[in-house]
Length: 299
Image 1 (cartoon, rainbow, N blue to C red):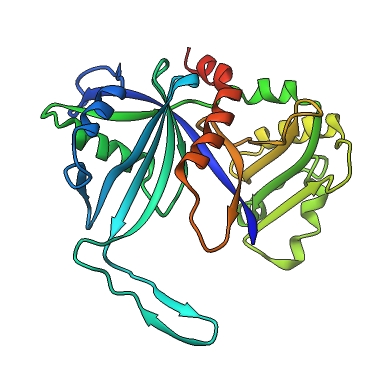
Image 2: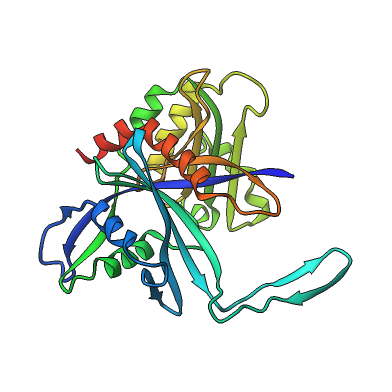
């Protein structure tokens, strides 16, 4: 049985810098480390990562896009789950000495622009974890490999390109709201006033077109965005789903993001993990669709 899952893709410049911070960043060609990794066995390119292990598990070159597909895995021999069947008791999973439970994360590397498009997976390696791994693979006493987030400067440009507004979700810290007065004339002031009797710590408001075609009111959306920018610390999150034309898929813009990212939808099958090539194909697609904006953000 199939199901869908949203995956966050973040973008980074790959750079080399002194570990002591005394030198400026220099763009680093990750391809040199991939050549090195190719000459190592899986065991040789596996490094200790806190109480676990990490490695670059698989990679391949996608020639038409001049991008590399990368798959990293975080390996553990602790917190082992059990195996269960519907009509029998669960049983322990016992690993062999050289077996691990793995949590993987995929990425696409644009060799011509030194950009890494990285899947976000909180159970696997984070961007800092991959920095640590690449630095270990680089094996330099003085220099490390770092991932510098691409700043999200394209929010206003994306909003100006939007033709339809499909969904708006806002999160509010109600304890901070109580300590100050939000004018009711703000676009969301009256909505929030209805939540006061509940005495909750946070409120989530979601407005959507649902399955119906069309768009929410553009002037109101613009007003909401302006109000969000005026209400520091009260709005703790805001996402706007838009379409740039009728044939484009829905793009979800994180109005609070400090780094450029996109959300992609992945179709998954129960009982099996997704192949990294399939994941990388989706990452590559959204990266190439946004590459111009991404490069403009770092120019």
